[in-house]
Image (cartoon, rainbow over all chains, first blue to last red; front, side):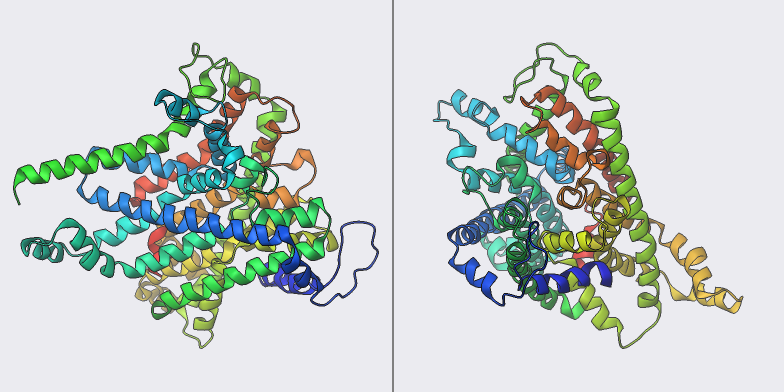
Length: 268
Length: 276
């Protein structure tokens, strides 16, 4: 593990400061912070950072997290059959391999795909989603694929809340929303933290899903950091630069990871 | 609270859930319908008759069997390596107290949540340098290494649940630590080992990026990558066949998941992961 994880990370830190390229150059040379300076001056890089933020915020924090919580909360009340059906469908979407999920949603969002057929049927305006709103389409795809995780985490958390507490509040006349806000949410706040953190980290590194659906396009309008990194390193053969981007991504990941560790710290 | 109110609430919850389930189910339904449809298209429609031609067309050495076998080799090898190493690493962590335990567990936890995607570019560069690029064993090693932190973490938590007394009895009878791990601890935590195994396998099976980067020759490609060929290189996409292949490729992980979930209740991998 030391060799295969720490090794690359160390090596990563080194080549990020070089101008290593895939072809044509015998020796890389040390270029200091040049790669990082290029990155922050590069419009495409800034675009990728921005898209990564949008993608992570929409799909992980808003989508998976909220929908997961809502599903878990509804499941507490729903009948057994419905609970089983919903659980099975949502979890299937989660278990499917990344590429298959990407492909399914690619078909769903295509101009002649299912979504537009449904919209047509409802007499709503249809459009070529993958072209007009690619980042929204891939965000939705990520919600589709990732919500099950949040749902399972929250279901477990909600099941652990003692019945007496909610019942007492109910007797005191607290409405559903107030109970949720004042009792349930504070009691599961650790789960919320953990879940948000894991979702975010997961979402930061999504590659296959976006690759299959849009290849980062059209143009670069759904090119998040992992895709940008891939393009720089392999399609443009600038490994040094790609690695610098990777290092920045890793840095963001580490920050989240540290926060996550603090949340769990007491239990280690 | 009146029974009527309970019932109307339950109805509301049911309707809400079913709406979401239906939305989630549309892409799934599409793939099943298309796989059976002789004239499948990107849009969902009722099939023009049901046929197994699509399956027939993809069930060839080149399209299905070789990639699936590659996947099996990669993920099987990776999983085996992961589980064995995780068991060996978790055992001392769980049984002996040492000042290094806590820092080690924290490092593992830290590594667990790092985005693997980010290190793929340098890993590629490293693999080129040490000549592991485009080799099955290199990819297996990396798979195992990337899955190991989480596997150790899970494994230790399960191992902590096995009482120490049983082992002490074995020790007095002269068993070595390795024997007691093999004969006593691992059998007692059977479900735990199953979870770690299945989880590692499922993660590797679905992983696209790692083999996509580390393997180059077509005859070594696992299904995760070869499915990609249906898109660009072969011209027009034959949706029916692509759907059929997706189903074949997804079946093993779904079966494994169902098997484990049945045995251990839903959210199997999460107990250990989230509660810490």
